[in-house]
Length: 258
Image (cartoon, rainbow, N blue to C red; front, side, top):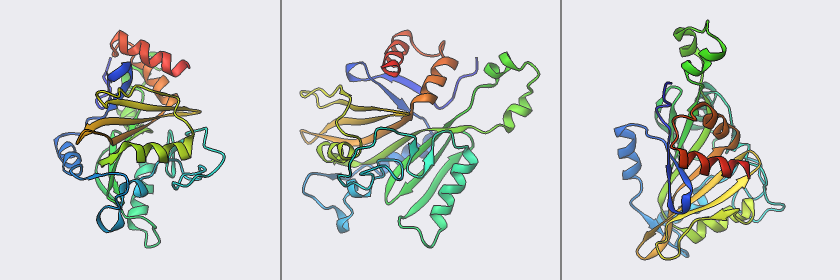
């Protein structure tokens, strides 16, 4: 079976999983170079550009999506920002490039890197977002359609299923407050008070949100968030059942079935 080259599922503190989407050496270096600053509660950052206020944390139109205390809170995650799950690679690329070139855009958008049908890396208001894509592998599709050729499969487009947000170090409390304004109380957490590592999790209709914690200067900070299509995660689990370690597969299955 062909492996999905960008997907690695690993266990984290408390048995949760994280999605790490490898985008090659140049992308990894870019991500690392953008994460050197940190912001604590009460700071406004350079020129007032405090990262929590610049972050996109919800699908467009979700109550509280701009960071306010809109009511009622969002109970669904049908996509990220202006882009629904399962949007094709070409469509997402076009939307992001339109945002980057539009004179009427209300945010600064720059497309930094892309690999067709795998990922698009963009900077939006100085925050990095990695949009990831998936399509059913050739070998799996051949089970149902033995006439499918490699050339035909190559022409098919992958669809959008995941966003990883990469920020400077931000006080975890600030990010948690923003997320709770949008989605309400978290569903679960694996954050260890001693190690200050783990994740807060929101299990929503259509998607999952992960806020990752890590210690910095003896305080809990956040610098990565993951937004994941629940339906696509279930599809990937089905199609790559033999790829996942059995323990990780059980943990992910149990979470998706809750």
